[in-house]
Length: 462
Ligand SMILES: Nc1ncnc2c1ncn2[C@@H]1O[C@H](COP(=O)(O)OP(=O)(O)O)[C@@H](O)[C@H]1O
Ligand SMILES: O=P(O)(O)O[C@H]1O[C@H](CO)[C@@H](O[C@H]2O[C@H](CO)[C@@H](O)[C@H](O)[C@H]2O)[C@H](O)[C@H]1O
Image 1 (cartoon, rainbow, N blue to C red):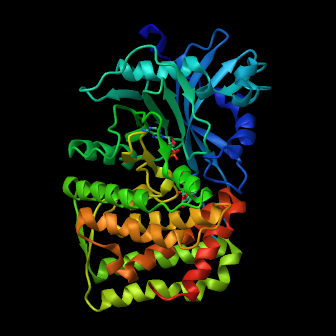
Image 2 (cartoon, rainbow, N blue to C red):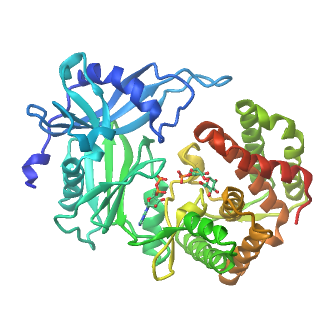
Image 3 (cartoon, helix red, strand yellow):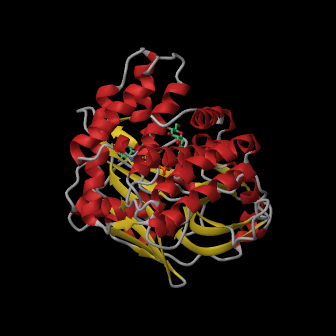
């Protein structure tokens, strides 16, 4: 592909006149749409860049659009989330692109044209890789690459169809490009942390090869990250379910995962600032947990009967802080679960997706936090797997917990079980997050975190 193709003009803002009615229908149906349950009432264009000339049959527009929505019940009006879209325009879609259809424009400059999600299409996807390879600058978009890496020509793209918070394209089983969908200004941990880990020589995380940034109205955005694709990998979730289906335990893998988590934590603590959390910081931390619980109970009525008992897990932590206990905080993964762990055919584990919990503000996701928070995420995940399997294997979750914590202690020297109050508070906080996540995205899964909530309010710390 010639470089001339990717020189651009700025997309006309009037494009939105064509897209607005189509996006109102299409956007809320996307898995990665964060504002589920509230209608979209309109859009504003934050940035628009034409990646291919629109005069012919094929037009390609890179858009950042802000979706306006009424505020959630009991919350104050917010500016609306900003989404990254790659919009293709054709006269008609070939059958292979049917799943990509956004709609047929009936007004504005695209009247009569077919509009689609261009990530499904090979030429636009190739163009993104080519732009990264050549370190292109297109309008406000900056395609950057680690100078020590190479991207070869001719890698064939395919869009991943897995349910994701973002969208990823795999190139020839060599690279994977994650395009972030909900965009916020600032340093994105999904690029920041893997880069820091690569600098530390940590082999547990694929090192970023290239990335897409934007400078818009004085704000910096990370829009996408390209990294090596771990060929033939299975994720921890698939593997755990496979073992459960055979009635087998998962102890050896859980232990290896504990070791991998500790390696990543140790490298992050070396690479980036750490902090000591004393009484004042713990008050804020416990305050955050308590607020999230109250907000979750507002959003999900079935949580309400458990609220008073759940508060006590957080109060127990506040009591320890009041007695003068302190904790070390550092940068962590922030949303660790079995689906974020990939095992190569050779048995090596990698951790991916350092974005943190997408619904939390970036500043909060980038704060040093107790590493137990990631551990709690993984422990919740073993519980999820055991509850999702068709076959109940007695003691499966407990064996995984023990093996994972032992593996973690072998590498880091710290066994998370020696701080049960902190661990319980974080497991509770995570289960509350999951209740909201499932109610919003996968209501059929709501019983899984609800069962954990029920257990936490009736069981002692173990
Ligand atoms: N480096 C990689 N090698 C192989 N597969 C990967 C890699 N990175 C991500 N994946 C696959 O892509 C999926 C989505 O990636 P992830 O970073 O979790 O995106 P999201 O933030 O959209 O959930 C993962 O579950 C995994 O199957
Ligand atoms: O899309 P992400 O991977 O960033 O994470 C979100 O989606 C996850 C589900 O896909 C969700 O994880 C929950 O379900 C998993 C099983 O599907 C389970 O392993 C996790 O323990 C459980 O939290 C995650 O919370 C959410 O942020």
